[in-house]
Image (cartoon, rainbow, N blue to C red):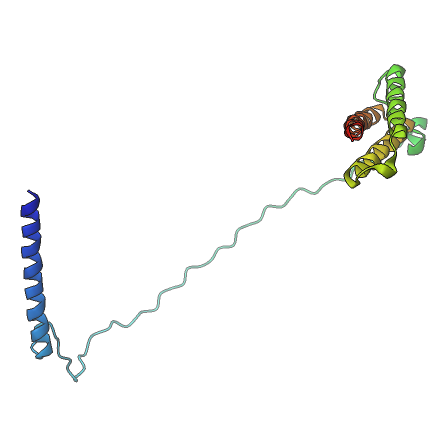
Length: 174
């Protein structure tokens, strides 16, 4: 089966080669059957003349008018005394009990004691940056407590406590 395919391919290749040789020899002799000779006389063709057509009319869309906004009415009654109080006098609480505030304060004191035990001058650059970050969290937590924002104070205290325990374990291993 394989031998038959090979023979068939050889026969086809030899026929193709023979056809190509005869084509090239007739082409070089100038007897190429596919060559078309050009004529020098122009052939007149009829081209239809375009006719004018009417341009379609463009219609403009009508725009809808937007309703006018009416101004809000001003109250005739004077504001209540609570509304006249300044923003600085207002205290916003999250409704958490005072016990939570003392818990946050105790955690801050514990973190400050941990920081006091660590000599910052002996720390590596990364550990010193962590030390400063902890001190910053503690300062911000005290500010949040003074502003009665116990939620923010608790969050800052938790971050400071996590960093402080990591820093203390690294320093104690050295």
